[in-house]
Picture 1 (cartoon, rainbow, N blue to C red):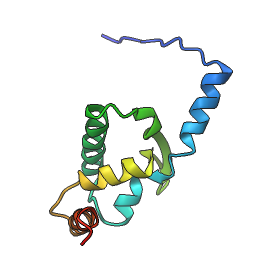
Picture 2 (picture 1 turned 135 degrees about the vertical axis):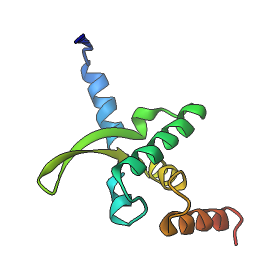
Picture 3 (picture 1 turned 60 degrees about the vertical axis):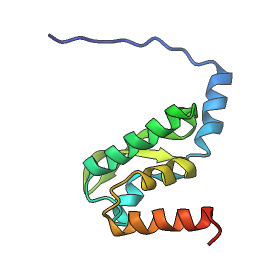
Picture 4 (picture 1 turned 180 degrees about the vertical axis):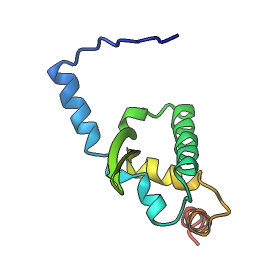
Length: 117
């Protein structure tokens, strides 16, 4: 069965303004971690994003201020990506596969900074 869901949501100029201000804080792309070899696949990246959003949800941090799904062109095809706040980007890295060298080094560096080592 095919189901169509229509979402009738009108944005007021104020809503649009607030959304555009929030988007200025989304300065990172999740796919940057793929380029840095911190994740090996889009599936692995998606899992790290999911875990990062779970952290934000459990801490009552607004997702719309930290994550936004976008679509970008890569190698001639359109792929899903995410624009992230710096905090969301670090949460994604910290929640990626810890067996990956880039991720493990970042995790250790974050702990060292937290402990002022």
